[in-house]
Length: 344
Image 1 (cartoon, rainbow, N blue to C red):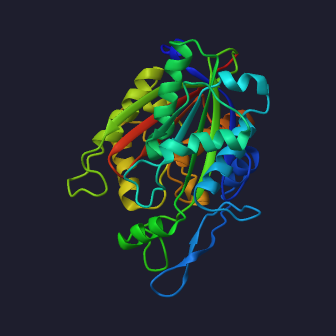
Image 2 (image 1 turned 60 degrees about the vertical axis):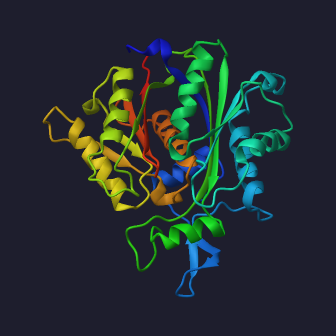
């Protein structure tokens, strides 16, 4: 591939969500479309309990403690083959909710990385940073990891994402904006929570799964604007990712998206695809959206897409050699990642 020397190999994945507490269990459940919404401690105006896709914990946790616990579980799954003595030289890129996300816990940038280190009993490399970019955060982290690996010569980078929309302030804000799915509103999402991790490094094997292209865009007609939607931002992000990998949209039989139920984002995805397709074959790629199983998981959504795709390539049910993942933030930020399974 044209960008192979800048590609990243995805070496291990870790996932924690409402349908599985590790990557194999979560991906198997998502593949067969298992979902597990449960009642929360919060009520809707009609005096019925709100439901959400919650991660079960024993004992129950909430707030920053749950974010740290989920992140630690996903990170440990990725680090199982990395000697503990090497952790001090391993940078961690920790993806969390964007600063303007309703109900976002305060001081995540200042405290969460330190608390993750404490939970794991480790101190990670000085290059470790917190990435506050919400659903597109995994693409930002992969782009940063690519620089650390190919420009600074670091052998491996750990990317971790953790987020939860199951809090009183977040649920209240989205409920007032009529964005939660319930019996009275089909144009909304189910709130969820999740964590994920990716261990990435320089390509080593002919069988590596590669992150071969990354793209970004900005959509002026975001969900909170009143501008006409043309999907310019998402089209730009996908175009950059495809160009970086040297492939076309018609070579991607699978698209993975953070779509979680809102009509706006389905319309955006359809518009972007229509503007990119040039073959005239009439064959549309299958669309996988794990949020139908695990809910809207914020900053963990994008990393979940990569984890699901990695499992599909590993288990042999991913058709073709390429998969495209794309993500969209409410504030207009757009990102896309092109995955390529190398062949011997």
